[in-house]
Length: 363
Ligand code: NAD
Image 1 (cartoon, rainbow, N blue to C red):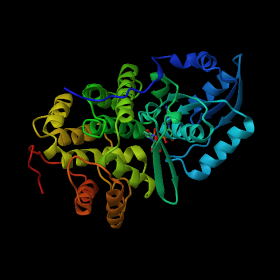
Image 2: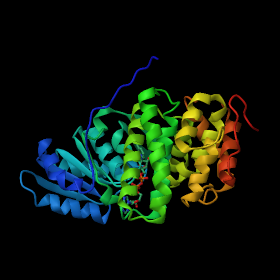
Image 3: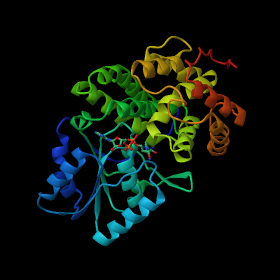
Image 4: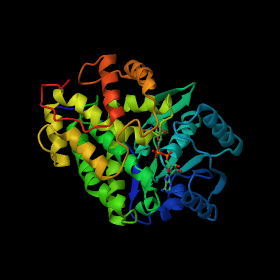
């Protein structure tokens, strides 16, 4: 066995009620002027409580957060940070809140404490994304990785089902692509498959009872491990297609993941027998049926399975295929624009992906 794994440094606190440790963590990082980003009611409450704590000042409560971080929003938030002379950012919310904090850290080099309330996993990565002119520009920089992450499953109890299901699929996508993306290694694959099993076990239960705290903890733990998987690897075909669907066609990020993932897995499965065996094991799927099992999980969890449901027009598929083809740098299976278009057409229809035998692709 031979591999390279570059573990990212970070302090993580996990558990119900852990949000109450936030003030201690601010003091631990010697924050004196704290810029809070919070777009949910829970987040605003946490920000207010933080303002009553001794040893530092909350200089701003920023509520405006938009998916894919439009560059105009990033510019305004950065200007506010400069005017407030902030030296630490606390982000409470989903990947959009974390993403705005990262945009600030990118130019101001100040530390982030993240309290994620969805399963997007951005808090585990050095990846940032900023969108302008219908194009999402992503990059990697260690300065944007949160120094401390507080996972508190109680904060996810109110996450609406329409966000919960797709967001869990966003996490699944990180762990699945980490099996074969550049940077893949056995440590990360093991963590990722643990995440896949935890999410598959918990998601239908949580969708049936959103207040199931144990199930919520399992999903958040799966999201944490999946974020680590994303942070340790590069993104492949699946993520690039989703970035195009979000950045260019403004589809909801997590929704795009839930629709595309089974079809991306189906496309790559023929050239990944060992990786698919691991995924089948984690999903309790039959031989050649990992993609189908992901689709079954989507159906069982009532998450979108077709691009039609997300409101994409059939006429947009050609532009989406062209843009995604230009963006995908690496993929285990060689592809052409017409392969990506076929994948998108399948995702548009949203049918269950068929069984795939290793070494043999289906038309
Ligand atoms: P989001 O942050 O936009 O949240 C979705 C919705 O859920 C929002 O309306 C938000 O206010 C609400 N919400 C969040 N937590 C809630 C809670 N606990 N209770 C009630 N409502 C809540 O969506 P997301 O899917 O978490 O993040 C998507 C963004 O994250 C995209 O821009 C994506 O590109 C980015 N992302 C980046 C990375 C990375 O590594 N850089 C990784 C994953 C996702």
